[in-house]
Length: 62
Image 1 (cartoon, one colour):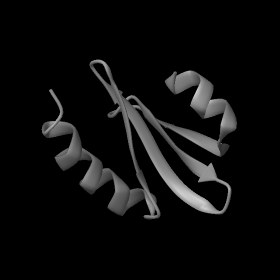
Image 2: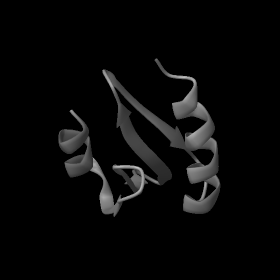
Image 3: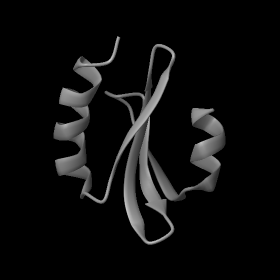
């Protein structure tokens, strides 16, 4: 599913240390990643800010 969502993003950038993508979904910045069975993301933040929030978020997913 992550790869399908990547196709919907404008200008997707692979984030190697996270295994996710940062890009635009419409007019909104979005950082999307997978962890186990989850597909998760952070929307509306710049890449640097989204990365920090996503790290905390990912640590809470089981």
